[in-house]
Amino acid sequence: MNDKVELSWLLQQIAAIQSDTEYLKAGLAQLSQMDVGGKTAPDEPEDVAGQAKANALRDMIQGRESTNQQLLALYRDMYYDLVNRSREEAQEAQEE
Image (cartoon, rainbow, N blue to C red; front, side, top):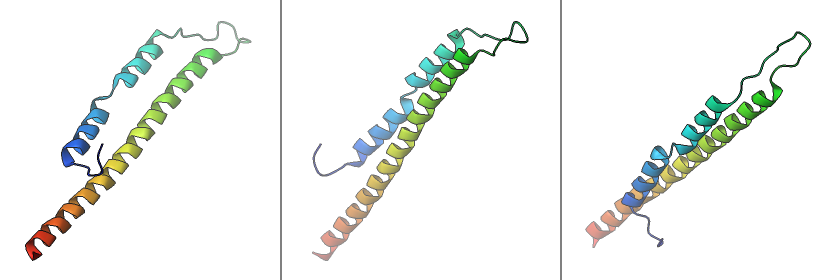
């Protein structure tokens, strides 16, 4: 990519983040396929392995969503820089 960021590129990046839901679908599919264990007797533990798997999937999805939020914040800042630069360029052109 060159040094000059264009609005169309920023919008494409935002659209890509918005449409990237495959990891959510995969996580939900894995959760739905998990065996659900439980107590069959009072002295048996709960389904610790199933709970650990679910927590790991939750953490994975939360991490991805956090990354998306950070990317969107970066793109927002880039957009503001682009808009301000465009305004400055327009003002300079009027002054000439």
